Length: 237
Ligand SMILES: [Zn+2]
Image (cartoon, rainbow, N blue to C red):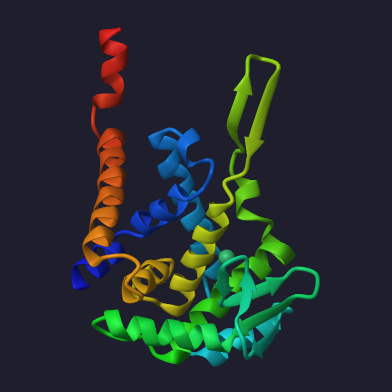
């Protein structure tokens, strides 16, 4: 698993790209736009964490208190459809609920696949920091996807078009906030994939291939930006 972790940790844009890939707007964005959305979302999360540092759960809890969020630990996991929630922010009440049993599961699954296991405190702090970013979005910053151009997902001539926000950019930003605030070794959306491997629902090999494909997509765009390719079209047309 070291190889995957190394790939993921080397460039946050790679795991963030995989997050955006799961958004309905993804296939409506050009390769250049995809990378721009990813970078702007990462920047939003990092920027919100700038000037703060929390190395312990108690410090994240103190920040939550300072920013008007109340943190509650609940025993069972709450189900959202078929997905067991690990943490949740309620916009109306400002309450962040952390689900003990789901977080226990994260800790033990990660321990079975990571070369350097995460402490329970770090697992909890990561999820709290993520939700705290959503709290900040709601109370101060505004939703990150609202700061990015809406994406046209359907067009019927010049008469009709449907536009959507890149909702996953909020998740990318929340992960970047957690990573920066806590000094995590990689963007924590990777936790979900590691858990799938730990549960036997995904193979390590498939994970490597998926991450590698995202890395190539990011690299292609980097090369296009820095190379003369983008002018070739003009020169030959
Ligand atoms: Zn979230």
